[in-house]
Image 1: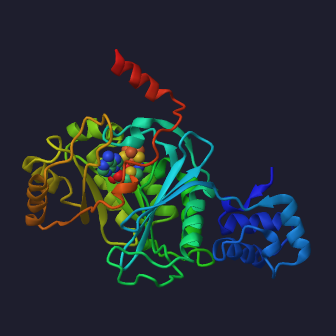
Image 2: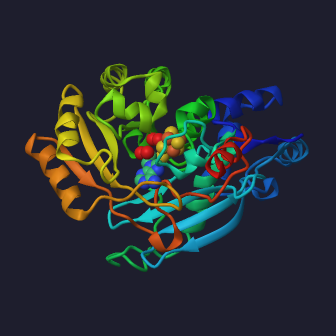
Length: 372
Ligand code: SAH
Ligand code: SF4
C-alpha cells in the first residue's frame, strides 16, 4: 500500500523522508505543496527534483476523502458529506461570519459514548477516522473556499476572495475527538503548523464530553482551546444524559478543567450546555449550574436542543431559555446562546450524517427493544 502523505504531520513526514534518504527541507517543501497549495499530484510540485518526484510517485499518494455531496445553505453555511467507505459517511460544516469562518470537523464515524440527546450517539460507533480523513476535511474546505467569493449572512464583505477562508476550527462534528486521541493530535499539529494552515491554538477548539485522562494528555501534547460538554449540573442527572460521567464524575471533571487551564491558550474553558425542555432547563438547574462551575474560569455556551426524529426530547421555549440565561448572568457568568445556522441543510450540531453502520450492533438492539 502506498503511504498517504495526508496521514503525516511534519515530524512524521520528515522521519519518512529520512527513510527515503531525503533531507528535512524536502519534507517541508512537499508539506507546503500539499497543505498550502492544495496540490495532490506530485508531478505539479515543480520545485522538487524529478528523481524525488518519481520516488514519491512509486511510494506515496495524497488522498483526501472523496466528497459525496456538497450543499450551500441560504445563509451561506456549507456542508460536505464525505465518503469514508461506511453507510452515510461523515460531515463537515463551514459557518461564515463577518469576522471569521468556522469549520466544524468530525473525528469518528459515529460515537460510542451514547449521550442520550445526540443523534450521533444514538447511531452507535463504527470506527475512528484516520489523520488523512480528519485533516482532509480542512484540506477540502480550505482549498475549495479559497477560490470563491465570501458569502456572509450580512454580506458585508460579500464578493471578496479570502486567502484564509477558514480562520477557526472546532472539533464538534461527529464523534468524540479525545477517544481518537493520536489521530486527532496529529491532525491538530497540521492545522497549527506554519508550513500548513498556521491556525493559532486559540482558534482551534476540541470539544469533549469529559474523558479526564485524555484531557490531561491533550494539555501536555497539544493544548488548544477546550470546550467541555457539561449538559447537567449534578452527577445524578449527568449520569443519565452523558454516561461517561459515571466513569469521570463532575468533581474530577472540574479538577481536570482547572489543570487544563494551566496550559490552555485561553484563560477560560467553554462549557457547552444543551437545553432540554423540562429535563435540565429549570431555574433550579440554573442555580445548581452556577455552583457546579464556581471554581473554573469559564464561559457558558447554551445550545437549544436540536430535535431529531424519535429523540424523546424537546427544545425549551424561548422564555425558559431566557430565564435560564438570566440566572447565570446575574451570578456573573459570561453566557452565549448558540445561534442555529444552516437549518435548511441539516447542518446543526447533533444532526450530522444520517445513520452509520454500527459495528457494535447497538442501533439494532435498541430498535428491537423499542419494538418489544
Ligand atoms: N463528542 C464531542 C464533540 C461533538 S458534539 C462532545 O460531546 O463534546 C458537539 C456538541 O453538540 C456537544 O456539546 C454535544 O453535546 C452537542 N450536541 C449533541 N447533540 C445535540 C443536539 N441534538 N442538540 C444540540 N446539541 C447537541
Ligand atoms: Fe459522542 Fe459527543 Fe454525541 Fe456524546 S455528544 S454521543 S460524546 S458525539
